Length: 357
Image 1 (tube, rainbow, N blue to C red):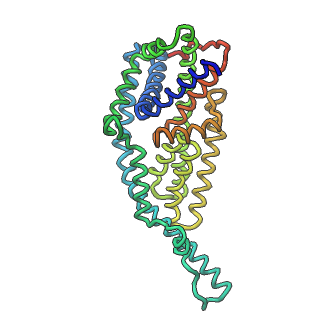
Image 2 (tube, rainbow, N blue to C red):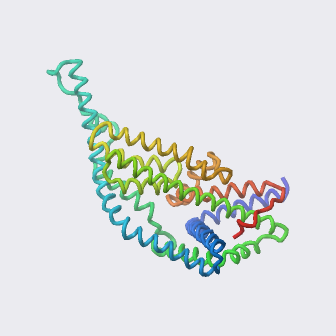
Image 3 (cartoon, one colour):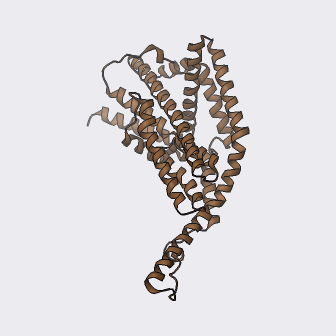
């Protein structure tokens, strides 16, 4: 083994230690980059379409985003919070309903075999609880509430969650004002011989991230709308809350749709035995529509993540960064896929001018 090997090994080891030590700070920077990417691309679209100065285009984008957030906070958030709290209370009731249905059917089966004079079968939940303790309704509701609190809680080394959110918003705004200056500043760290190559790589990462963001927004809105329609037709309670949950969790592949389906299925159990099966079937149909019709029509020949890389990213970034890492695993994976492809590709490639930042 030559000195070059030991040098590369040392660089990788030190870099890994630095990333692990600063993982919370790095996660905030990643959040800022994703947000600034969305803002910059919206700003570029307005600037190109309306031929406005960048400063005015950026102001329009910020005003539109602020209006959307304000509207959601006033019109959507209060009923969602109210319905979600009621939802957490009704979920344990749905689980109790499962217990009643199971024991009722087991008792009927017992009567058919041994006659009505025989003793009823043992409560199936009590039987299972002797082996594996089953939490009661209050424990389940508390666990769900704590999970969602942990998901949105950003408290850590930089202080409270509010400070972290402000940090992300300020950095995102600063990058959005002068994106080229920050990109060129990063390129100054790279040796001159590799700068053109990395400039192309950065631009391609920007394109890939933009395509992913656009496709995910359309996909999530579609899933939310389809869930709203399906749950309304099936007359499931808390339609708005369940549709919003399905829309938000859609950004987490594989895991998100499963979690979003638990809530309406549990609530449907309060009505009858067949309604939860109908809800389950409708959610499966919605996910197939999203996977095989909506996403392919949006992406076409654009960025398409490898399934293996998606799964590895989800587990890896969740382990490193926690719950927020799970949410950001896909945009990070998109960038990593482009980096791997471009770094291993020795051929110089050209970039269409309309995609430049």
